[in-house]
Image 1 (cartoon, rainbow, N blue to C red):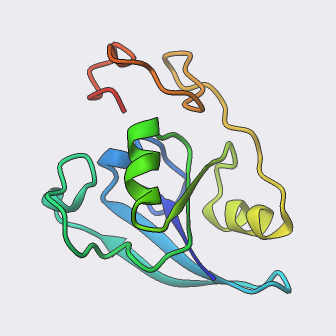
Image 2: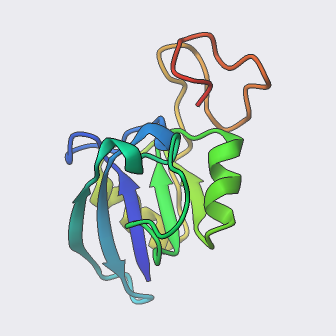
Length: 132
């Protein structure tokens, strides 16, 4: 199974998934083996927040792990057959390993006090991030 992780710095699991342009893609086996497959460093127009549609480099992954994502992003990826899972695990490989074991560290609130596990409604979070 291919699992992608949002990671703007290629070191930690990051949030604001709709704005993310960097992903680490792992191959995971049912036996629990995890291997990094590739790193995606996409153009600005390929961030899902403003993506016009069509084929996308993240297509083909089964799961996307992220520190934070809004419900619109979750729905957009679900339409592509990608399950979005929010995690509080900071290490990308550890996040994938936990997911494969059926364990997910609960997301932690961001600097604005949001857990990103719920939609923010029409007003967004007020942090000028675009409403996640």
